[in-house]
Amino acid sequence: MTDFEREQSAASLALCGHYYLDLKMPERAEACFSRSREVNPIHATVERLDHEAESAPARAFEKLQAEVRKERHPGLLRVMAAYHARAGRSQEALRWLDESLRMNPSQERG
Image 1 (cartoon, helix red, strand yellow):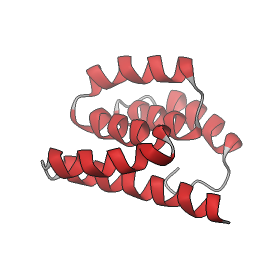
Image 2: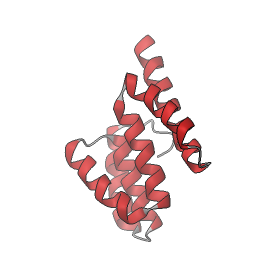
Image 3: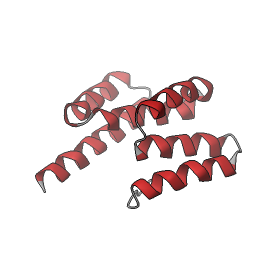
Image 4: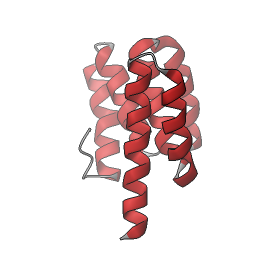
């Protein structure tokens, strides 16, 4: 249970970092991402890319592709789905979301 709680805390800290980026408070965001990375670096990567997909989609897409090639993590796949959905490519978004949900059916954000 302790490992699960640590993982959930890391995910929450990364999400907090994402919100601080939205609020244009990068120092606070980095503090959250740093703490999250201590447990598992993927959460910070997912939330950074999710923020970037919202704010600078073209740049985010290249980074997303590179990360997905390295690791097919459900969170990265969810961000890729959101990227395609925002771009109006719903069939492509569904393909990514379907794979993400098959890997982790309990995703709340998915």
